[in-house]
Image 1: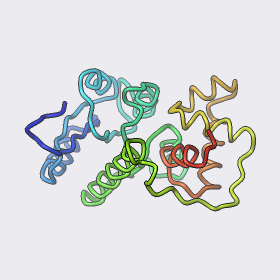
Image 2: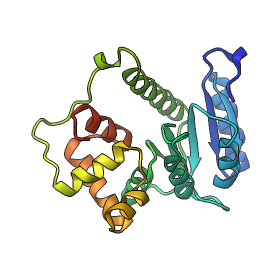
Image 3: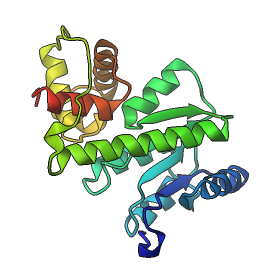
Image 4: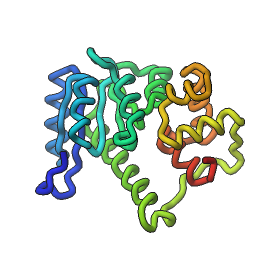
Length: 215
Protein backbone atom coordinates (compact mmCIF):
# COMPACT_ATOMS: atom_id res chain seq x y z
CA UNK A 1 0.00 0.00 0.00
CA UNK A 2 2.95 2.28 0.58
CA UNK A 3 3.90 4.41 -2.40
CA UNK A 4 7.56 5.33 -2.43
CA UNK A 5 6.82 8.44 -4.46
CA UNK A 6 4.44 9.76 -1.80
CA UNK A 7 7.19 10.37 0.74
CA UNK A 8 5.83 10.57 4.27
CA UNK A 9 2.18 10.69 3.16
CA UNK A 10 0.05 8.82 5.68
CA UNK A 11 -2.39 6.29 4.31
CA UNK A 12 -5.80 5.60 5.79
CA UNK A 13 -8.35 2.82 5.37
CA UNK A 14 -11.90 4.25 5.51
CA UNK A 15 -14.74 1.74 6.02
CA UNK A 16 -18.42 2.72 5.80
CA UNK A 17 -21.50 1.43 3.98
CA UNK A 18 -22.76 4.97 3.30
CA UNK A 19 -21.39 5.99 -0.13
CA UNK A 20 -22.13 9.68 0.50
CA UNK A 21 -20.15 9.70 3.73
CA UNK A 22 -17.32 7.78 2.07
CA UNK A 23 -17.15 10.37 -0.72
CA UNK A 24 -17.24 13.39 1.59
CA UNK A 25 -14.76 12.08 4.17
CA UNK A 26 -12.39 10.70 1.52
CA UNK A 27 -12.33 14.01 -0.34
CA UNK A 28 -11.74 15.98 2.86
CA UNK A 29 -8.94 13.72 4.10
CA UNK A 30 -7.25 13.69 0.71
CA UNK A 31 -7.49 17.48 0.60
CA UNK A 32 -5.65 17.48 3.95
CA UNK A 33 -2.83 15.40 2.49
CA UNK A 34 -3.77 11.82 3.35
CA UNK A 35 -4.02 8.92 0.93
CA UNK A 36 -7.34 7.12 1.46
CA UNK A 37 -8.41 3.59 0.49
CA UNK A 38 -12.08 2.68 1.06
CA UNK A 39 -14.18 -0.39 1.81
CA UNK A 40 -17.95 -0.86 2.17
CA UNK A 41 -17.87 -3.27 5.12
CA UNK A 42 -15.61 -5.14 7.50
CA UNK A 43 -15.26 -8.24 5.36
CA UNK A 44 -14.14 -6.24 2.33
CA UNK A 45 -11.71 -4.34 4.56
CA UNK A 46 -10.17 -7.59 5.86
CA UNK A 47 -9.58 -8.64 2.25
CA UNK A 48 -7.78 -5.34 1.64
CA UNK A 49 -5.63 -5.84 4.73
CA UNK A 50 -4.34 -9.08 3.26
CA UNK A 51 -2.40 -6.99 0.74
CA UNK A 52 -2.20 -3.49 2.21
CA UNK A 53 -1.10 -2.00 5.53
CA UNK A 54 -2.55 1.44 6.29
CA UNK A 55 -1.20 3.80 8.93
CA UNK A 56 -4.67 4.07 10.48
CA UNK A 57 -8.20 2.70 10.10
CA UNK A 58 -11.41 4.76 10.27
CA UNK A 59 -14.38 2.44 10.64
CA UNK A 60 -18.16 2.67 10.91
CA UNK A 61 -19.78 0.49 13.60
CA UNK A 62 -23.07 -0.63 12.04
CA UNK A 63 -22.43 -2.22 8.63
CA UNK A 64 -23.72 -5.22 6.64
CA UNK A 65 -21.66 -8.37 6.06
CA UNK A 66 -19.44 -7.67 9.09
CA UNK A 67 -19.96 -4.87 11.60
CA UNK A 68 -17.25 -2.70 13.08
CA UNK A 69 -17.00 -4.66 16.33
CA UNK A 70 -16.29 -7.96 14.58
CA UNK A 71 -13.90 -6.27 12.18
CA UNK A 72 -11.87 -4.64 14.96
CA UNK A 73 -11.62 -7.94 16.82
CA UNK A 74 -10.19 -9.56 13.68
CA UNK A 75 -7.68 -6.70 13.33
CA UNK A 76 -6.59 -6.93 16.96
CA UNK A 77 -6.35 -10.74 16.81
CA UNK A 78 -3.90 -10.56 13.89
CA UNK A 79 -0.34 -9.81 14.98
CA UNK A 80 0.38 -8.19 11.62
CA UNK A 81 -2.37 -5.59 12.08
CA UNK A 82 -2.92 -5.40 15.85
CA UNK A 83 -0.78 -2.24 16.15
CA UNK A 84 -2.83 -0.13 13.69
CA UNK A 85 -4.70 2.79 15.33
CA UNK A 86 -8.47 2.51 14.84
CA UNK A 87 -11.07 5.29 14.99
CA UNK A 88 -14.72 4.29 15.28
CA UNK A 89 -17.42 6.43 13.64
CA UNK A 90 -20.93 5.74 14.90
CA UNK A 91 -24.38 7.28 15.07
CA UNK A 92 -24.71 5.65 18.51
CA UNK A 93 -23.51 8.15 21.08
CA UNK A 94 -24.58 6.78 24.45
CA UNK A 95 -21.93 6.22 27.13
CA UNK A 96 -22.33 2.45 26.95
CA UNK A 97 -21.81 2.58 23.17
CA UNK A 98 -18.54 4.48 23.59
CA UNK A 99 -17.37 2.08 26.29
CA UNK A 100 -18.18 -0.94 24.13
CA UNK A 101 -16.36 0.57 21.17
CA UNK A 102 -13.22 1.34 23.15
CA UNK A 103 -13.28 -2.00 24.96
CA UNK A 104 -13.62 -3.81 21.64
CA UNK A 105 -10.27 -2.38 20.62
CA UNK A 106 -10.85 1.03 19.04
CA UNK A 107 -8.51 3.84 20.11
CA UNK A 108 -10.93 6.69 19.40
CA UNK A 109 -14.76 6.82 19.27
CA UNK A 110 -16.45 9.67 17.39
CA UNK A 111 -20.20 10.20 17.05
CA UNK A 112 -21.93 11.11 13.78
CA UNK A 113 -22.52 13.78 12.69
CA UNK A 114 -19.04 15.16 13.32
CA UNK A 115 -17.02 18.17 12.26
CA UNK A 116 -14.44 17.30 9.57
CA UNK A 117 -11.80 19.37 11.36
CA UNK A 118 -12.31 17.33 14.54
CA UNK A 119 -11.92 14.11 12.56
CA UNK A 120 -8.64 15.35 11.08
CA UNK A 121 -7.43 16.41 14.53
CA UNK A 122 -8.25 12.97 15.97
CA UNK A 123 -6.51 11.23 13.06
CA UNK A 124 -3.39 13.37 13.42
CA UNK A 125 -3.34 12.88 17.20
CA UNK A 126 -3.64 9.08 16.85
CA UNK A 127 -0.88 8.95 14.23
CA UNK A 128 1.42 11.01 16.45
CA UNK A 129 0.73 8.73 19.42
CA UNK A 130 1.46 5.67 17.29
CA UNK A 131 4.71 7.25 16.12
CA UNK A 132 5.77 8.00 19.69
CA UNK A 133 5.03 4.42 20.74
CA UNK A 134 7.01 3.07 17.78
CA UNK A 135 9.91 5.37 18.65
CA UNK A 136 9.88 4.18 22.24
CA UNK A 137 10.02 0.55 21.11
CA UNK A 138 12.86 1.31 18.69
CA UNK A 139 16.51 2.36 19.30
CA UNK A 140 16.75 5.01 21.97
CA UNK A 141 13.11 4.59 22.83
CA UNK A 142 13.89 4.19 26.51
CA UNK A 143 14.17 7.98 26.75
CA UNK A 144 10.59 8.56 25.59
CA UNK A 145 8.26 10.19 28.15
CA UNK A 146 6.14 7.80 30.19
CA UNK A 147 2.38 7.92 30.56
CA UNK A 148 1.39 9.60 33.81
CA UNK A 149 -1.22 8.00 36.07
CA UNK A 150 -2.01 8.43 39.78
CA UNK A 151 0.87 6.98 41.82
CA UNK A 152 -1.40 5.03 44.14
CA UNK A 153 -3.24 2.99 41.47
CA UNK A 154 -3.75 -0.57 42.68
CA UNK A 155 -5.02 -3.35 40.45
CA UNK A 156 -6.80 -6.42 41.73
CA UNK A 157 -5.15 -9.80 40.93
CA UNK A 158 -7.70 -10.37 38.17
CA UNK A 159 -7.19 -6.90 36.71
CA UNK A 160 -3.45 -7.51 36.70
CA UNK A 161 -3.96 -10.70 34.69
CA UNK A 162 -6.25 -8.87 32.25
CA UNK A 163 -3.87 -5.95 31.69
CA UNK A 164 -1.04 -8.38 31.04
CA UNK A 165 -3.08 -9.96 28.25
CA UNK A 166 -4.04 -6.51 26.92
CA UNK A 167 -0.35 -5.57 26.78
CA UNK A 168 0.26 -8.70 24.71
CA UNK A 169 -2.22 -7.40 22.14
CA UNK A 170 -5.01 -9.86 22.93
CA UNK A 171 -8.63 -8.92 22.25
CA UNK A 172 -11.25 -9.07 25.00
CA UNK A 173 -12.75 -12.22 23.49
CA UNK A 174 -9.38 -13.98 23.61
CA UNK A 175 -8.79 -12.88 27.20
CA UNK A 176 -12.24 -14.12 28.19
CA UNK A 177 -11.48 -17.53 26.67
CA UNK A 178 -8.12 -17.65 28.44
CA UNK A 179 -9.59 -16.79 31.85
CA UNK A 180 -12.78 -18.81 31.25
CA UNK A 181 -15.13 -15.90 31.93
CA UNK A 182 -17.57 -13.92 29.78
CA UNK A 183 -16.40 -11.20 27.40
CA UNK A 184 -18.64 -8.77 29.28
CA UNK A 185 -16.65 -9.49 32.46
CA UNK A 186 -13.41 -8.63 30.67
CA UNK A 187 -14.95 -5.45 29.26
CA UNK A 188 -15.93 -4.49 32.80
CA UNK A 189 -12.36 -5.06 34.08
CA UNK A 190 -10.88 -2.99 31.25
CA UNK A 191 -13.39 -0.20 31.90
CA UNK A 192 -12.55 -0.25 35.63
CA UNK A 193 -8.83 -0.02 34.91
CA UNK A 194 -9.34 2.90 32.53
CA UNK A 195 -11.29 4.61 35.31
CA UNK A 196 -8.62 3.93 37.92
CA UNK A 197 -5.71 5.09 35.77
CA UNK A 198 -7.42 7.97 34.00
CA UNK A 199 -6.21 6.60 30.66
CA UNK A 200 -8.30 6.91 27.52
CA UNK A 201 -8.02 3.59 25.67
CA UNK A 202 -6.51 0.11 25.54
CA UNK A 203 -3.39 1.34 23.73
CA UNK A 204 -2.49 3.68 26.60
CA UNK A 205 -3.38 1.00 29.13
CA UNK A 206 -1.05 -1.49 27.45
CA UNK A 207 1.75 1.05 27.26
CA UNK A 208 1.33 1.96 30.94
CA UNK A 209 1.49 -1.71 31.88
CA UNK A 210 4.70 -2.19 29.90
CA UNK A 211 6.35 0.97 31.21
CA UNK A 212 5.52 0.12 34.84
CA UNK A 213 6.57 -3.53 34.57
CA UNK A 214 3.08 -4.89 35.13
CA UNK A 215 3.79 -7.51 32.48
